[in-house]
Image (tube, rainbow, N blue to C red; front, side, top):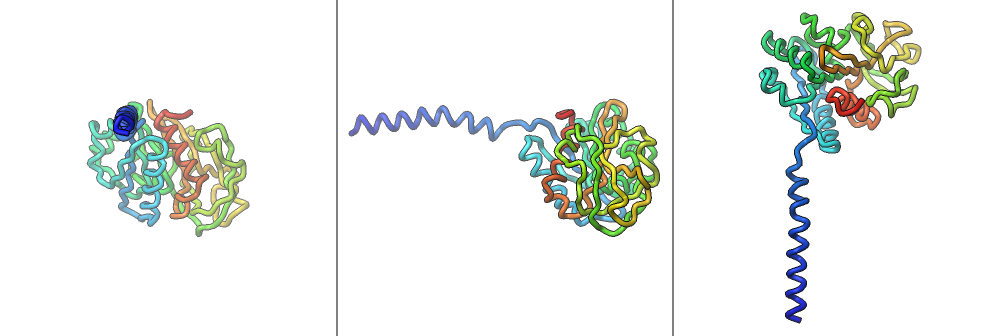
Length: 251
């Protein structure tokens, strides 16, 4: 029995030696890339911001990227931005960056960084023309929250390939000062204004799009007003696809 006990102890030690390094590697595994979520507001503040941050952090944990959430504009300096593959403007509003931060962010994007704009990201930096080009369009107005049908016109992109051609969902539906097509964006989805009240853009009402700015990638969705949005599997996958594309991890 003593020899048997020694055998089991030795076996356990050997098994531990085999398993432990793998577990340690998993614990210390480096993220595939880093995402900065910026949610500073100097205008209207969405009460869904915490849910949005939590959703992006959960997506990061599931898909292997690290997420830093902040409202601190001092992150917008060259050395700090260089640590991130993507900057997400999550329901920002107003003039959230000073001149030096704007210059750093512009250089970051044009040098190959990624931008993801969510909903009120288009209600941000109205007096900075470069940002208007980056986001693609500025918010103009919206009707009350209601269900509408989103027509997905490009289902090959990582942010839309999982979506049905007609996607019925409830949100706050933005009208824009001008069509983002003026900035040569690639439109992914449009709103069907016959399916809700308050649309002002007519038959061509883009609601999600992407384009390149310099060497950088920019993706925007006008959806994401409500807390419930960030619990919707289809919307979360839409957001994930935008992040992965902007980070050059998916095409």
